[in-house]
Image 1 (spheres, helix red, strand yellow):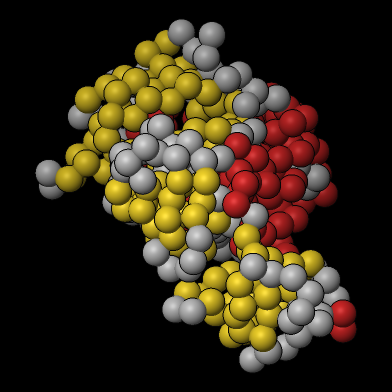
Image 2: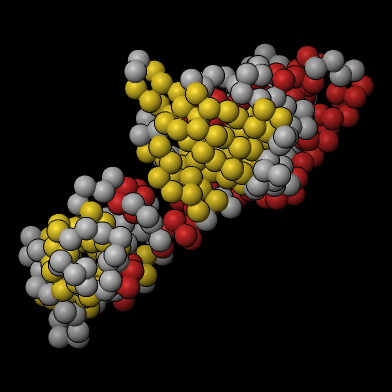
Length: 353
């Protein structure tokens, strides 16, 4: 049995489909992320699962219960909001106990539950602290503890790390993932951050214009995107154009000399685009290889790697390389050889989303 199922879920606002005929099935204990740009419909989808929005069409199932028409308090879902939604006039323990007392739990039992969840999020010593004295990361963990306290069947996160700085975001997402693994609770997580989703998820649904473009594991999505939108959204910034021949056996490049061989039975002959991740574009010093001659437009330091912007004729290409700056054999403006790992390329129709 699936932990969560959405069947044909649609939600329209002013005649526009924010969520359009979405089907999802999430396994028990799975960490499942919904990934997409702003306005893609991901938060609306989460609000439908939480009961904060009603779909115009379709159904939502939690285990063997249809919950489409149930109010939020009857769904047994714990939710962590983007702004945490903590009560500033209450202590940490008071925030967590609030929902428990609303559900009729006695003060003694609520106190035990509060202490238990604070242990689980490593905040046992902050029970009596005012939430206003906590750091952003600590407030985030209090929000998680409050969601866990009701022992939900499903844990929901709506962009929970967007207000944190980079280092705290990385640390907190690791804590969330570790906590989810320890508890085994089924989790639905919404984010616009590609790195966050790829790092934290068992599976991901990429959503665009209210529609699910692709569902898969992080490695499947990154290495085997099924649409041009998924490829570009996950960082495949290199685009070449070409024409697929009538027997679907090769693509003649429009931008550079040569052909891309292969069998492209799923495509119609005619204009196509070839997308590649930055790792598939390789630069070499002059005279040391490379199929094409180009120049380095810019070198961007990224800590453990460098992103080179390369010019090849009228094309600007991205090349990601690892290494120490002292060992880089070139600088901006220098000539380089450029080659491609065509095995990593994907071909899509030009009008692919």
